[in-house]
Length: 343
Image (tube, rainbow, N blue to C red; front, side, top):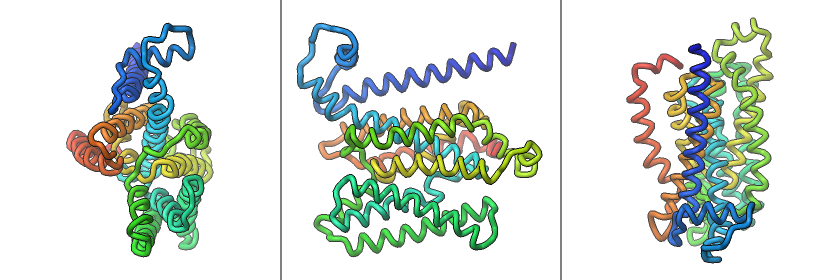
């Protein structure tokens, strides 16, 4: 009886979060300098499916499908991907302080993008270089434990810190030699994160990667619980720990790299949102993974809307996530201070 009640409660939680996600998306699409009421937004979308008498201006439809819808979809994908990868890293490494940055993915992507900007490349090349940079950083991070012949999780985390530090210094050198009138501003803007330049073509590229990698993590979410039991217990259950851990890290890295290549660096989502999800569902990754993903999508949609409407010139997302994410994370730690032994 209690088990059925628990399943029903979790199902109700998911439905509630999905409803909030939908409401947030409708409000975000309508918000901006050209305001569109929620009823008009719903009517415009319905008109693409069923015949409805047009009661809205043509400009409203153009604003939605040309300007706002691509970045709303991108915010949902990027926020969900970063939060999902953060929850996965924290589960795999059994460390609540781990975030997508821990393997140097974000820093490596910034290096790749900055090099492309220095070379005067276009947006496509910048995004491809960012993707390659993120993966090279992960390859370097995972190579250090092999070189040192110590494949423990602690060594991997320390390797991520080393690579992240190297990448930060390299990025500083690139910014030092960049043209201050043109290239430096682009590099800094990329580093701070933004969805202003996202188009539907960008989404078509990252959506398959995000969906496939996220789908694999969703299907393997119960195996993350096995890893949390410890290596000896996992081996006793017949789990190939190295293979499983490799698949999880690769998928989480794919999610982070594909997100960074269209949005730049956006911090705190992969660190704070899994904690919020854990407060709601507990440490069980079977429930935590889906909830964290939806929470990340909702959070970045709200942040991106605030960035668009709060000033005439858009505020970079990295600034807002830092200003909101840091106090929010402190609040979560304050609420969890007596339960941190869960991890």
